[in-house]
Amino acid sequence: GRFHGDNYLEVCSGPSIHGTISASKYFKNILMSEFAPQNRAAIRAWLDESPKAHDWSSFFKTVANFEGEGVTPQSVEQRTRAAIRGIAFCDLTQEEPIDHEVLFKYGLIDVIYSCLTLEAAAETSANYGRILTKLASYLRPEGGLLLCGMYNQTFYSVGGNKFHSLSQDEQTIRRLLEAAGFSVVEHFTHSFDHKAITTDITCNPSKYFCLVAVKNQE
Ligand SMILES: C[S@@+](CC[C@H](N)C(=O)[O-])C[C@H]1O[C@@H](n2cnc3c(N)ncnc32)[C@H](O)[C@@H]1O
View 1 (cartoon, rainbow, N blue to C red):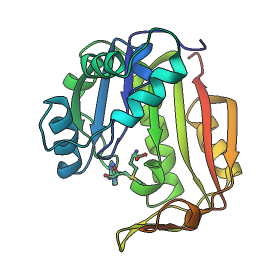
View 2 (cartoon, rainbow, N blue to C red; view 1 turned 180 degrees about the vertical axis):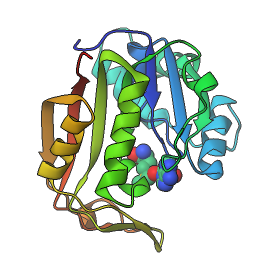
View 3 (cartoon, rainbow, N blue to C red; view 1 turned 90 degrees about the vertical axis):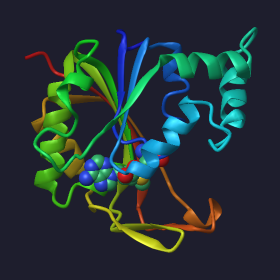
C-alpha cells in the first residue's frame, strides 16, 4: 500500500526468484539482476520452464495461501513468470552497475528490493554508501527501497566456500542511507541462529535486518 507504480527492480537475486513472487501482485514490470553467470542461468532456466530449473512450487503455494480465497499456486506462478521482464548483469563495484538501456526500458524504478547483497559486494563503508547513492539515482522521487541484510557480519560461507561480508552496525547503515537521500520509515530485526537453519550455511551476524526507506524529494 505504501508504494505505487509499475517498475520493480531486484538488485542481485542470486539463483532465486523468491523476491519477485509477492511483488508480482503489485508491479507490472519486474527486472531482476545478478552478478554471477551461473545464478543468471538458474533464473533463465526457470523463466524458460526448463526441466532442469529449481522447483519453486512450495513458495507459490505459501504465497497463494497468504493471498487467500481464489488464488491458486498456478496463478501465482503464471503471474510471476509474466511480470519478470528479464535478468540483467549487475556488478555493484562498477560506476554503472546495470546497463541503462535495460534498466530504464520502462522508465524510472518505483521500488528496489535487495537482500544480503550490498554487504557482499562492498569492501568498505564508502563503497556501500556509493552503491546506495547509485540505487537512489535509479528511483523516482518518493520511490521505495526494501533493503535486507546483516548487522556486524564479517563473513558467510555456503557449502564450505567462504565469502566476504562488510561488517557494519545499524547506526552506520542508517547514516549511509541518510547521506544517499533516503528516509527510513520501517525497520525490523531478527536474531539469527544459523545452526537452526541449514547445515551448509555458516555466518556470524549480530542481527538480520529488513528496512523500508523512501527516496527523499529532490
Ligand atoms: C548472500 S547472496 C544473496 C542472494 C539473494 N539476494 C538472496 O537473498 O538469496 C549475495 C549476492 O551478492 C552477489 N554479489 C557478490 N558480489 C557482487 C558484485 N560485485 N556486484 C553485484 N552482486 C554481487 C552474489 O552474486 C550473490 O547473488
